[in-house]
Length: 123
Image (cartoon, rainbow, N blue to C red; front, side):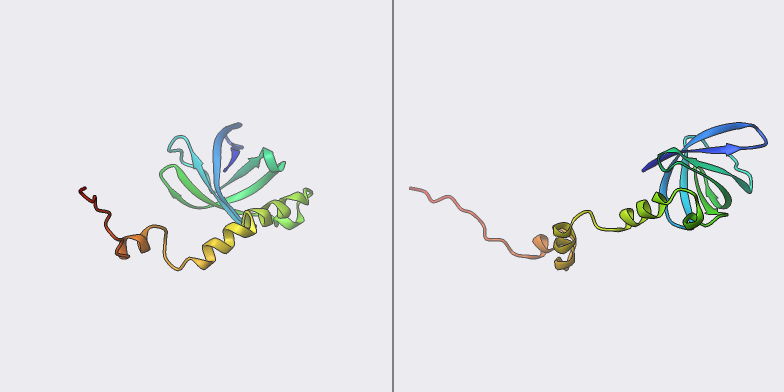
C-alpha cells in the first residue's frame, strides 16, 4: 500500500490518503475521513515521485476511484511503469507454482477428506 496526498487547489491544502489499488489508468484511494472531493484534483505519490491530475470516477464513504488524466508511460519518471509491472508479477516462482497446482482453496479439501481417527490402545 502506498501513501499519498490529495491536493485540492481551491482550498490550497493536502489531505493524506492511502493508495489501495494502482494501475496504469487509475487508482483507488482511501481517506481517513469522509471528505467530498471535487471532480478533478491532484494526487501526489511521493514514493513514486509523481504528481498527477486525476478525475473522480466514483466515491463510497472514505473510498474513491480516480482516473489519471495523463498517461503514466509519458511521465518523466520511467520507473513508474516498472513499479506497476512489479506489482502485477508474482512474488516468486515457487509461490505461483504452488498456487496454480492447487485446485481448491486451503483447508477446503481437508474438510472433505475423511481422516483416520487416532485411538488409544488400552494396555
